[in-house]
Image (cartoon, rainbow, N blue to C red):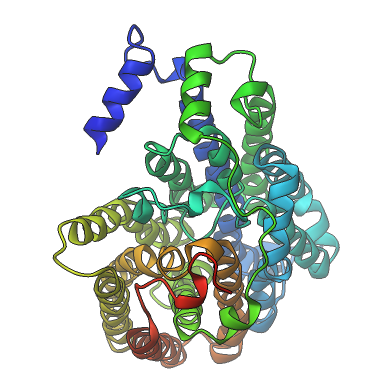
Length: 489
């Protein structure tokens, strides 16, 4: 596949070596998209690290010369859970609306707004959070809303069309369908689409890794406000570069080589079909394979968001790591997922293309197998609260989740390719619920941060994985549903 891809690229502009990526405009757009999602996820994840320092009891001398030990923000575990989950209140509200917005406004504009607004909100966070915790919560809700603009499924976009083995690689957007999907429909030739999307979406995982790692170090050296200032200014710098360089479509880019523009436009072959199609809502909402996708998304994200939001706190207060160590170790699961995602996607395509397994068998094997392994590792952590064993189990468990994402995230294209964007919108809505419920529930379960309390958290997570395994294994399908076939409603 890559060989064919590189030959096509060479034939398009034969005198330009492939390593000169800046001479091909679509590669520049891809790189900047990668950096855009790096910024979005860094701004999203860093709160999980800094909240540990914000609420930690520290010794200092007050104005009267009295030595006291107290935290800067006296938030109990329930309020901390509300802060950590507040991002998802905005994120969940308009999942389906986001697709409509991306279609009308375009991916370039939405990406600009998402990163720019998130950056500005990060810069004002240190001031507003000292005024009120509810101002902090409001900021997180707004960030969820604007980042949805960059995480919206693109209705009728050409990414929902089957393009051979590229179908599975479409999953590598991490946890969401970015506004980049609208960009790919204009910039990505079909034979390169999966590769370009893969590179762009990888910024999500790298942003999580860097935010988890660097935020702890910055907090320890410069204090928690510096985290928001540094990441905020970096995101603003990216916004300026994006506005200067990126255009909505090749025909609007005055710096693109005419041969590249011709190649892209000819390969896309015109606008997507079914722009005005009606959706078979009754069939969508009563289809068990559709519900299997929703259940799988909920299951995977329950474990992922539990670790994403609570892992730094667990590392520090229960395993007794310091703030720097907590941030670095909390980044390991995302780092492992970053490497496993391409392997999972390639493996799924290889098994299907070699006809070793059917599409349905691959989806069920990857998803259910991943959930079972994760359930086992969560139980290991629950009963072996030792630093090395816990870190190794959590890292491996979350990393193995990449195989599940290469299954249920692609499954809508198997069962209803024409309506995949709507299924994804429904699925992402279900998958966002854990981001709201999990931190609040954990705040109730672990008020004292004891091993016994955390054991219940990991056992609940393990139980969720087991239930998800059973339901997806029974009801998932790899076949196009009768109601989703051309001409049928």
